[in-house]
Structures are given as C-alpha cells and as structure tokens.
Image (cartoon, rainbow, N blue to C red; front, top):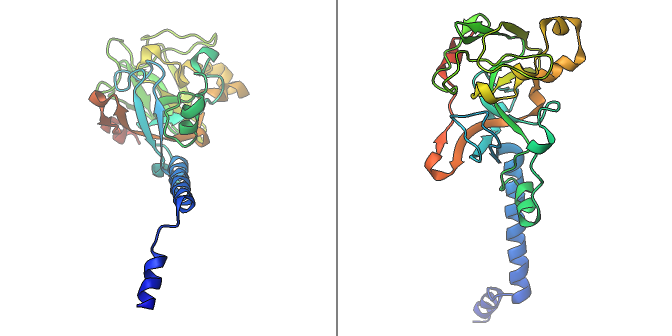
Length: 252
C-alpha cells in the first residue's frame, strides 16, 4: 500500500508553476520547429505584382519549398522561383513596409507571407544561350519554347525588348541574345508585357562583350534563390500546385 501511495503521489499535478513551465516548453518547441521548417523546408510569400499573370495574381499567397535545391540541386529551366533582389530590380515603392507587432513575429518564423522578394520563371541556367526570337518564341540553346500554356496572351512575341536606357518595348520581336554566366539564372515573368526581369535589365551585345560588370545584374545568382514555388494556398478558390512546363524538357 505504501508503494502504491508513493506512485500515486508522483502522478499528482505539480501545481500552477509546473503547468506554466510545461506550456512554455511546448511553445518554445513549436517555435523552434517552425523556424527549422522556414530555414530548411518551406516559407510563405505573397505575389506583389502582375508580372507572373495569369498563373500567379497580385496578393496570391504561395508556399515555396526548399528541399529541391538541397545536396547540390539547383533551379531548373521552367521552375518558378522566389529570390532576393539581385541588384536594384525592386524600386522603393515596390518594397512593402516591414510587418510590425504580431505579424512581424509570424514573419520571422515564416508563417506570415512577405513581399520583399521577386518571383519569376527560370528560362536559362548557367551556360545556356537565351535569345529572341523564333517566330515570336524565346529560344534556349537553339530550341524554341512553346510557352502558350503559361504566358499571358495578347503579345505577338514571348519576350519584351531590352533597352540600355532602362526601358523596353513590350511585345516586340527585335533580336537579342544572352549567354548565362555559370552560377546564375536568366529569369522572366510570365506576363511579358509587364515584367522587369532579366530581359529588361539585359545589356546590349556591345556592353556584354566589353565585360561591363554592371551587366551581371541581369542574371540572378543561384545563391539568392530562396526556393521553388510549389503551391498557391490563398485565396482558396485559386488553390493549385505549380508544375514545370513540359516544353523545357526539349531543351538540350
């Protein structure tokens, strides 16, 4: 009986202090797990502009997955990726104010979507030659891409025209070519008439050949990529998975 009473007493609650400590341990563990998930597995972002329409619309909430680029994996042609600004791509009015209060805490652990990054589709990877155009189609390593299933309709050409003065002509088909440096990406928005992407920031062939270091800002460092857009999770009526288009499989 004495042993039974002793066991029973050990199972009794330890009072209010013990309950508080237990709750704090559970909360700390949950936050730690969330930080680990944000760092290594997934992170939420929202779409700040029309540059990826029609697939991604303004204020869509997307989940970016990171394991695809583990263990030496890198972005592939056709991936929609989120990346840090590679060099003044975002103007001051495009950078949203940082979240405050409880939202800031959620953003820190990856539960509140942030909009201080860019989202584009990878068209070329290191060593690729990207050019415009073949009957209005972007060409990668000599292979014209059929992008009709995902780019915004209405333009006669799948690529906007870069200009050295920082502007471009949407929907035109003036020729241009770029060789993607190793360790970098050539990215474009699906809404080619409204996307300040790699083609927008691309230098003229003359400046590219001259070795002008400022021309590198047209290409996104792989190290700046956060991850691949895997799913649109909000609003719920737009829920859907993001897939790599088959047309990129034909590129050598």
